[in-house]
Amino acid sequence: MKTDGAISIWFFIGISLLVNGVLILGAGLYEFSHPPETKVVLYQLHANVWWGAVLLLCGLVFCLKSAPSRAS
Amino acid sequence: MTGVLAALLAAPRLVRLSAIDLVIVVFYFVLVLAIGFYLKSRSNTAEDFFLAGREMTAWIAGLSFLSANLGALELMGWAAAAYQYGILAAHWYWIGAIPAMLFLGIVMMPFYYISKTHSVPGYLKLRFGEASRALSAISFALMTVFMSGINMYSMALVMKVVLGWDINFSIWVSSLTVAVYVTLGGLRSAIFNEVLQFILIWAGALLIPILGLVEAGGWRNLQAQVTANASAEYTHLWSTLGSFSDNPMGIHWTGIVFGLGFIISFGYWTTDFLVVQRVLSAKDLRSAKMAPIIGAAFKMFVPFIVILPGLLALAVLPVKLTGESVAVATGGHSYNEVLPLMLARYCGPGLLGLGITALIAGFMSGMAGNVSAFSTVWTYDIYGALIKKNASDKHYVSMGRWSTVVGVLISIGTAYLVMQFLSIMDYVQALFSFFVAPLFGTVILGMLWKRATPAGGFWGLFAGTVSSIGMWAWVKIDPSVLAYVALSSHAKDMAENMYRALWSWLVCVIVTVAVSMVTTPKSDSELKGLVMGVTDIPSEGQLSLVQRPAFWAVAVGIVFVIFNVIFW
Image 1 (tube, each protein chain N blue to C red):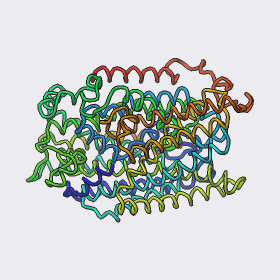
Image 2: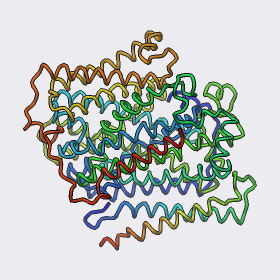
Image 3: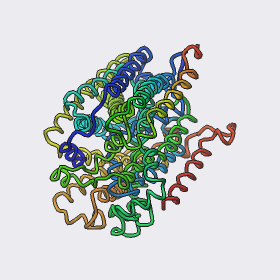
Image 4: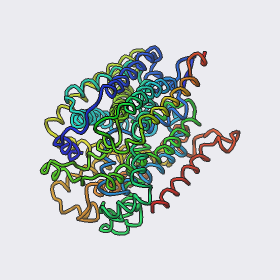
């Protein structure tokens, strides 16, 4: 939702997903290279790597689709 | 709810956040505040502040409508209920929500929207007069700030138990954050943040059922494990409801269908201003009709992140969860810790922070919903109607901002009151329930029956509310009358609530009809835009089939039926 060239709510959501995606993917990759002593269940699936990547991609799409520059 | 919190109080800290998790939580707080500051310049008129300028799309209004209800205590509470009672808990998401949401969109929304009311009490004023508005506005405002305080305390307690955070720190940080962004940006800010919170709740909670199903080996294996660990009844939605004694909840299908599916659900989803306010912000009538339908479509899938984790916990957790008293006595885990336990089971660094953020987001969206609804009802329906009529638009916006701050402060006071006297929580929740069912009777008769008179509306609402309080007090004084109120002496609290709602709704309807028959109704011209039969509802003939709200309501209704059949 946006009016008068204002920033869309979807842009804020994109920013949120993008930043969370980068942080979670980063944490997942670090964990991948430095396996922790205490592992979560299904650690071998490396959920934080692929879930972080999914969030990052979704965030990128939201940001690009609803960037303020496109609105103006 | 008291039980949930008592159990949480006694539990040890469940998880420990890493630095990256804390960064994710802090980033969330920074973002919601940034949204509030950004929207400050766009909340200058009363229409902007209280109704978000009435320019929300159907998607935004619909997701906000759902998010305002998706509090974290609800998520944790229903995950616990799923562990305790099985898939029966999904009734609160399906028959206990979907039909009412579709009814709101298709039948009731045109009258709310065309009447241009700013609130549900405002509609009662237009339809039945000032007395009905005052009764519903004062009760709603009081209960809303109390509920907000209870949610605030609950969140602080969950943060203490899950993360070891100080209760005072959690209460003040979360409530001041909500106060800042709602005071600055009004309803628009609350709605923006609710949509953000909705996305974060899904992003943070969706991994639990996905990984849980991987671990359990799919739905069939999950059913087999639940049957082995609990009983086969835990995975059936309807087939065990033929008798009170055949299912884990001790409930009969009539209670689910008529009490929950009709009265409680319709009362909450169609007349509670906390959720209806979101839909009133829609930019046009079609969007206002579509918003609850979009909300219903997403609501149908919420059991995937709430009920399924509870069932998965029954199958995969190595420890047996118990009721709160046993958990306190043995130092074990209670049902109410299901969601945090499942979060800790599958989520490593980063994901854990996102999951905790989802819980905080859920609490804050509920709190912001309460506070923004309180501010609107206070300013328009109490202050503007009873204290200072005909003030300037700017004055009412200023009052809206101040009442938001005051509402948050009263909520904080309530949170500390609850901390001292935990049982208050149950009483306030009961009080809240007293008004919902009769209000639905008054509003639905007002919208659908033009013969209903102002006197009928007021006395029906009054009698319904008083009868509900009376039944509740009667059972408290003499528990043996439960057999009459709830049709069974073995009825649990939930069953009692459902039947009490049903009787109080009937009292409201009967009194409204009886008084209306002996008093003078309003003329048709006075009822235009308020009542079916004398209101011109814009034709949707120019819209294609897929653009029509009714088409999507039918589609959602079909999926709803399919889900009920699949899990019968």
